[in-house]
Length: 240
Image (cartoon, rainbow, N blue to C red; front, side, top):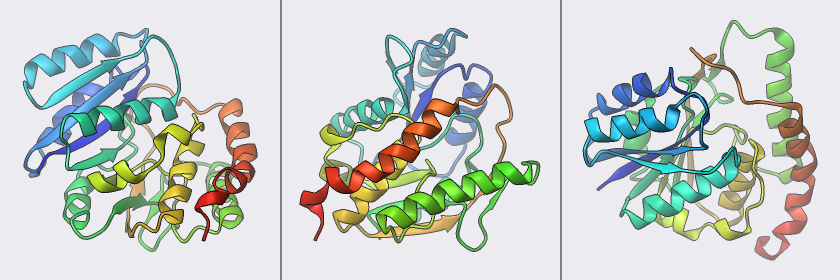
């Protein structure tokens, strides 16, 4: 059964070829990649097209007209993967912060669970040791903040390394999701919980990006802080 990994990109020209190569070295049958590029000025979109030619039938590309945000990139990617017949749909960053080899374990686990999460905040999980204390504290606090307000059992609700069964993605009300920064991960985690899907978390080491620059900004952080409070009201109809 086909497994498609959706990878949003914006200025990831240095990372994308290395990441795609690492993914396609994994012993996972029918593994494909879908790149969703937001018109990267560094040429990431063209690099993705070159990779598509070099990997016929294994890689596809969606080109968007500008920097439209993480949330809409994933939603478009999920719809495209469903239309292409994917049985399992994953999401990961393009910057090597997520350990590629962990996909093998996640792919095995998603046969039994609706959603498999690469988690920084369960036993065995960790953050890059080069991060300063304040950055680790901010990351942990943001995750705790969202989990507490929404009452989520998932330990890592802000992370973006996930693999889902097709039926899980089909069951999510994607048309209702409005979050566009990393709070998109929180909103989908909340929906997964409300809809009663089974969740398995496996520990990962979250590394600092190898190349390029981070896309995190103050506006993205503020969106997350305020939107978490709105989610309970937005999905009151799904609460038991």
